[in-house]
Amino acid sequence: MMSITVIAVGKLKESYLRDGCKEYIKRLGAFAKVNIVEISEERASDNPSDSEIERLIEKEGERILQKIPKGATVIPLCIEGRQYSSEEFADLTEKISLKSSSICFIIGGSFGLSDRVKVLGDYKLSFGKMTLPHQLARMVLLEQIYRAFSILNHSKYHK
Image (cartoon, rainbow, N blue to C red; front, side, top):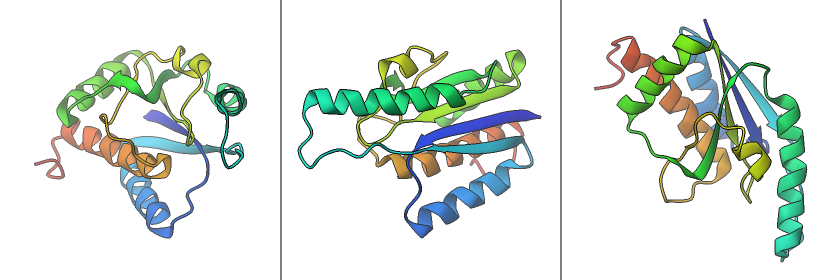
């Protein structure tokens, strides 16, 4: 069974996001073991300088690097990542599953991911040019992972 780890900076604050994520994790249980690892978000001043933002991203990045499972295929979510259709993402998931039994997705905080984290990516994923709150991105990611497994298993979920 595939092992999927989602490392995410910050906690889910809204109940609808927690409920949505719980639902997709429950559905994914038929296909994979899902582990959510929350990394604490660094606090920024009201008007952070570029150097403060860089320092915050690096601190979060250090904590992320410590949590990446050994041997996992690493997929950071970042704006410079590739955009996949749901079918292409399912194909990528299948391709990865032939080589590895573990995938680690990484969602950065409000200011993004450190370059040290991005460079570890075997693949980079983008949901598009629009900016999503990182908490919403977690639920969208879980839904798309579930959709990918649904496509691969020919379920009626993906029409």
